[in-house]
Length: 180
Image (tube, rainbow, N blue to C red; front, side, top):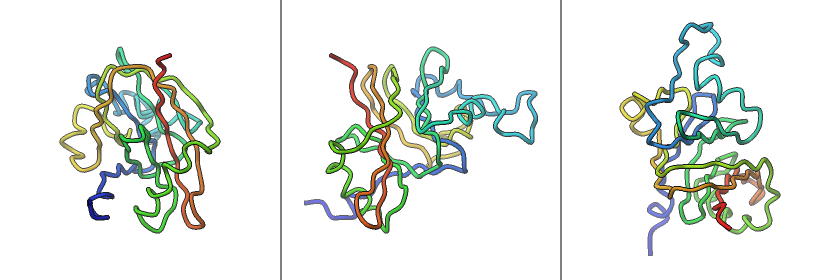
């Protein structure tokens, strides 16, 4: 049986304040975040990062090359992926990682899901802070991104913010295959 440390040792992706994004690895080099002639003092205008910042909801989808980025907007919560549940988990508040993750599976069927979007991916994706350019992300942020081996397909993606205990609240971004 795995120890608590093994079971809960996960990579949590952090944000500098902007949204996190999940982008197909095949188009990662196309993610641009430099000002490119925009007002340098207004990062919201910086390329793809600026487009991601304009997502006003918990979820959004942006075209990047011939693929789509999933924007985890609204708040810059630390986020990880649970492949066994096909869900991103956003750390809203909890006294520990164990407390946060323990209640996730139990609330999936009773959650009030909101903000559904359709997201198509060609294969593996990368979760990262949208402020970093894709060309240098893997080198500049070696500990602050997460490679996820998603199968190609279209997903119905929904968000819910759920209290799973008196001191625990989790954001869940659930991926459901759009196959009939």
